[in-house]
Image 1 (cartoon, helix red, strand yellow):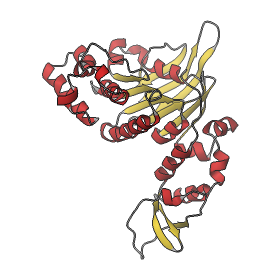
Image 2 (tube, rainbow, N blue to C red):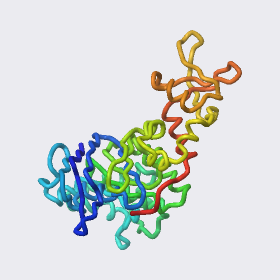
Image 3 (spheres, rainbow, N blue to C red):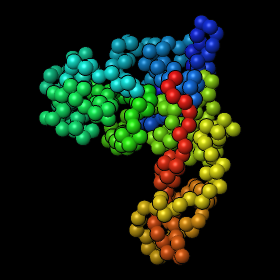
Image 4 (cartoon, rainbow, N blue to C red):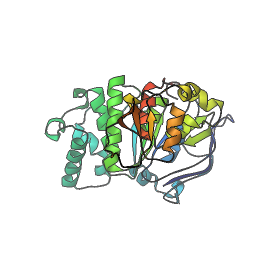
Length: 320
């Protein structure tokens, strides 16, 4: 879907914002880029839709160089969500969502149908919210509008630059959950920049950790947690060695799943360590936790990552 080949961005001062970035983002993947301030993560994002031009290398979208696309068509076909959502204050919610469809000359009927569909998708009743102005909405509602505005013309991919970082923790967690639910139905390719490791672990199919303009490690959340590439990743993730050694509270992770006494299944005591549990899950989709010889529920990798995400201390700095 998106391929980076030796991509660099060097400024006239000689400083590299991004250096020799090589990665492939798969179709339908939720790809998170994270790193400390100045690591180049936002620069990488903005090079995809040519808000920042490359100095060297090539970016391909669907095997075509981004330089070969008409720049307007390129941007119309890539949804873009910012931290500061920047809804047009003098336009209704319907008009805000309809901006790109109208630029693409969609019919009024098709545009209205799309607006209503998207509002329903994020739990905002069209009859109530369609004609409202942005200042009549809460911060969380405005951010929902920002997300669906990026989806309005049904783009193949969506770029999201720290879209939830300005929100309060409760609203932020709710929107993270909403985005995960939304992704299940829309299955877009999402490139998501954050400085929050907890958010990255929760959302990402894969996580790209950057430092000083270069990739340090790309991997799934459990690969990042359990097999950090170096000390920088260990420190950035925060307390990886402690997490490896601590005993999981499996009772907070387990979910109910039917099993039979005759069936073949793996069980672990509730006192089992994270390392041991993940080792067993390399060979099974799920295992069962037991206490005093009694099965109390099932556990899988997703459950562990969500548990760790909630217990992970937020790392990194504020916006680049």
